Image 1 (tube, each protein chain N blue to C red):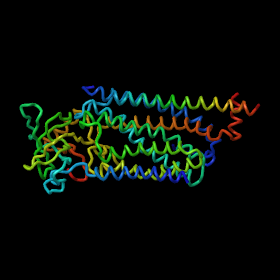
Image 2 (tube, one colour):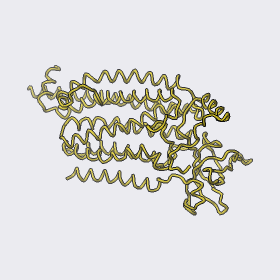
Image 3 (cartoon, rainbow over the protein chains, first blue to last red):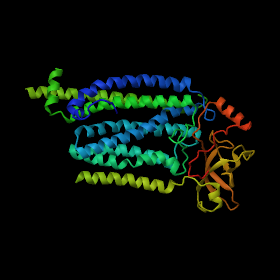
Image 4 (cartoon, rainbow over the protein chains, first blue to last red):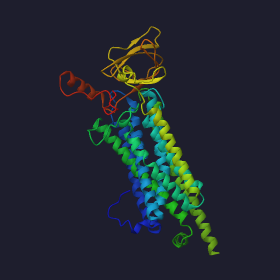
Length: 249
Length: 46
Length: 152
């Protein structure tokens, strides 16, 4: 969630991040809405039929962005968890907790749309190849992170335990990404990578990138909204929250 | 959709439903939380 | 103390799952060359992956049984399969078949899956590429992805 020109040090305190998040949230929500409308229009009306897969390939415009976000959110979550453990900053832990449900949702969507794409094209809903298996493990890691946090009563311990799991689990992300190169899989290789030109018609690629941006902006918006809840909940006994509640009356 | 309608719509509709559910969930969470905090603040005021 | 135990248990389960799953699935399929070299499992089920040889697909009169050969351009294995084929099963395209080799060296498939590549384009572009290829111009995109363990 990069915004240049902001003094992050000042905003690393929950009390000052709370209003900032409230101000930023509508912008990202607006961007997400516009990009979703454009992306959906392109997905169905602009992007042409695929020469081999016909209309079924349109699942890709959800599947690939969801899969990218599932991995990206996990890395961001693990970075926040690490920052929280190293510097003991409260906001980092709150950010990590706020990212997890959305990450889990995108992981589920990647698996779900993958199954719906695999059935007509490959002839199966599911196979235990390296790509599909490692993405399923990512879902378990998200679920493990959330349940570990919920299962431990002492908030500090809960944060440390779940943070540890998030950090260790990060090894799974490169495994997912490179699985199609390292092992032979039923899943095809990457259409887009740094070392070669995309093997996809430009308009299809642009559609996919617009959908990815839409998911990305959505993630930022919903995470900012959720972290505000998280902040209020965990800081409810602090003076600034009490004052805020007084003002709201 | 060339015979693939069920698969394509199944993907898009479930995605839309999940995103809608997540949005409703966080809004609900904030509402409940604010109510609780308001009650707390009334109690402490006496 | 509890959080350490919880963390270790969680990590342990995840690691166990990863190792277990990858142990049996790192090699999702074997190429015809690996089968000829007897690197594929003998006497039990395994997956055979490669390209469906162009011109090899023959259907029996019952409409269900299909004969074709799978090739990696070095070796070729004959396959027999009875059942429904996926939409993307085509000559010259990727395929992964699960089954076992019989004594005659014929692969008796119980399940046939299509393996497609990561190339997406409109039909007009594909046609143009095909024409260009026939005219001896730029080669069309490959049918099977590169970097797949180099097995096909």
